[in-house]
Structure formats: structure tokens, C-alpha cells
Amino acid sequence: MSEKTATQIMMEDREDRYRLNLRRRRAEAMTAAILNEISPFLEYEDRRRDIYYAIFELLNKDGVEVITDHTRQEIGLPPRDGYGWTADEIRAYEMRRLELMMRPFTMVVDPSVLKENEN
Image 1 (tube, rainbow, N blue to C red):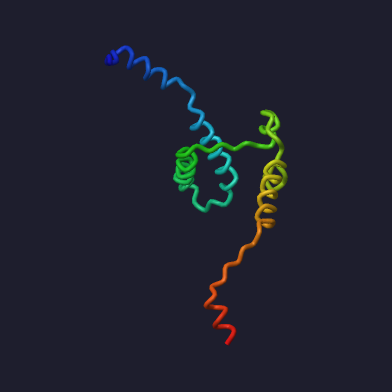
Image 2 (cartoon, rainbow, N blue to C red):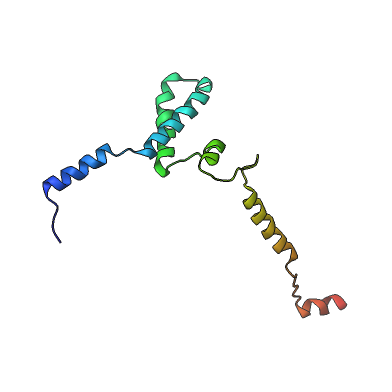
């Protein structure tokens, strides 16, 4: 196994620097939108930066993606209802509930309990 040359390492670093960080961009946009909505309720303007970074770190850590109804339509995903369910998800959920309701009910009774109740 060959070791990387200094030129190869520099080229990889350069590629990483110029690669678009979508996770960061999405987290920044989402953080700005949230802060824009809640800023009228913030009592202390000087805490705004702390709040921004706390929200940003939370969203950027695991990566947050918001897919709007418009985005779903653009990429060909089925629409969701007012509660966030697609028709297929509702069908699958209801089928599972029906299966559970229609499953035969088996009751196991300890015979000693029956003898106690007879007396």
C-alpha cells in the first residue's frame, strides 16, 4: 500500500474546501427562518447570537431536511394530507390495525383460579 504524496493530500484538501456543504447551507437557512419568526418574542437582543448558534448546532449536527408539499410534487412523491400522511401510509396503518383487531383472541386461564372461584 502506497502512502499519499504531499500533492495528493493538498488536492484532496482543496476538493473538500470547494465542495458545497449542503447540510450546512440547509441548517443555516432553517436557523435563519426560525430566528426570524421568534425574534419578536426575544426579550434580550444580545442573546440572539447565542440562540442562533444553539439552533444551528442542533440542526447541523444530525442534518435536517424539510420537504415541503411543493418539493414533494416536484420530485414526484405522493401528496400528504393535512396530518402529514400519504394515502399509502394510511392504508398500511389501517391494514395493520385491522389485522390486529381480527386476530383470534386466545385466553389462557389457570385451572387453580377456576377451582378457587367455584367455592
